[in-house]
Length: 206
Image 1 (cartoon, rainbow, N blue to C red):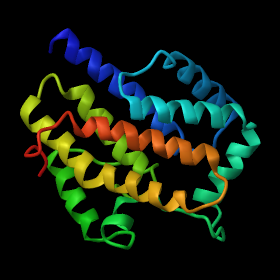
Image 2 (image 1 turned 30 degrees about the vertical axis):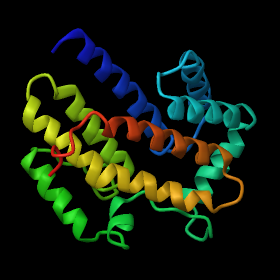
Image 3 (image 1 turned 30 degrees about the horizontal axis):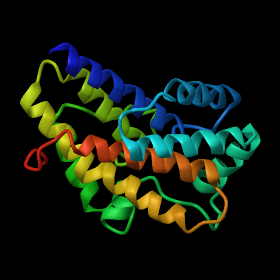
Image 4 (image 1 turned 90 degrees about the horizontal axis):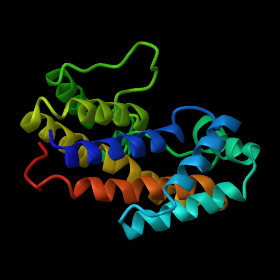
């Protein structure tokens, strides 16, 4: 693997981990500080105008919010079973119109071929946004040794699952009032995945 590819993959891993941190657990003071620190580091620009604009909007939303505000957003969107504003972080919800739809079966078949599985401690299904990001990060970390099949797998996870869940969540949260931080965070994810899609020729996904 040449240095340029290594640098690109390192940057991809940082951004995937950044996006993941908004959805893997309740926001905390430490997360809030980490988010602002990384956004400061990215202040010089990424080379993508849509992503830079989304990152700027996220930084503004976080700077204008207290930790408790972000925690309340997370709770109402992802944890409160009675919230009218709850959104689903599962790709099958947006692909099939229901959780645990047929696309989840296809995803499990792909993961079986890749010899990947979720830990018992992860209670959600494999099409949950956080697990999909974990799979993508694992594939990026292995990309130097299994180029062709690895690239096809990355393209498949991205196009057939990750894009569906992020675009679906983006559409749902756009209609809600408030939730400024998570609207901005999902916009960052959407802009980032738009860049990701450009990495793979259209015939790569299966």
